[in-house]
Image (cartoon, helix red, strand yellow):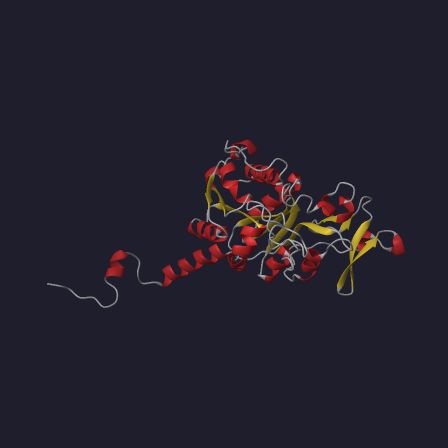
Length: 337
């Protein structure tokens, strides 16, 4: 097939983008449009599926096939679309409320089944569209319109939820990191199975600055660890900090101190099926550790839709019924005269 020459502009619908000025959703939209333009699919083979929420306006802003579903049901719709037409590159757009609250049950089973869907989960730790209630990822003690004295619920850790559900692909990123997001989205499309990409996204109206400690320009180099498969885990403004394994736990070290060199650092293996280290990376949090970003887990496995097609082919191969006439004349039959 000839090389496709789409541009990001080809995926812009022309609809007025109605997000609040400064919303992190704009950057995510730009990254998805660029990523899709660089992948080798025909334009009509993309499907954007969403539920309800600010993020779920996404299909209107994309110039390709899409479906705006109801609250929490994006996973069901996306799974059905993919199984019905495995040729499609299906992108599920959801938020921490839509995907993990009313849609939480569907989310874990979509991950468990390993349906070949790319799930972009916007995490702003708040309900934005309904005006500022706490969500399943809001921090403990957070004061919101529905928790005026502070929420008393522990938040979901999305990465741990994915791995606990048997997930094979999990990545974490930040809304404004368009370049990194494009590469993560392209990698997720190449992965066969459910790809969960959690994007830390800023809601400028109802939870502004939720991720400031991680994204602040002055400290981000010290607070972010960007993982690359096959490379040592190094971070810091001077690129002199690293992650080591100390017994069964991770430990931050300084290269050059106490005889520590790059060879002593952990090397990232996103394809390792045992999730022990990946789980530890997902759990790293400030101030003791930097937060891990990039593709944390990408383990090859057959997808749900692949297995369904294989099962159908096997049943057809063994079946004595090859056409409608065979079906009509099977079992107990009789002739009416």
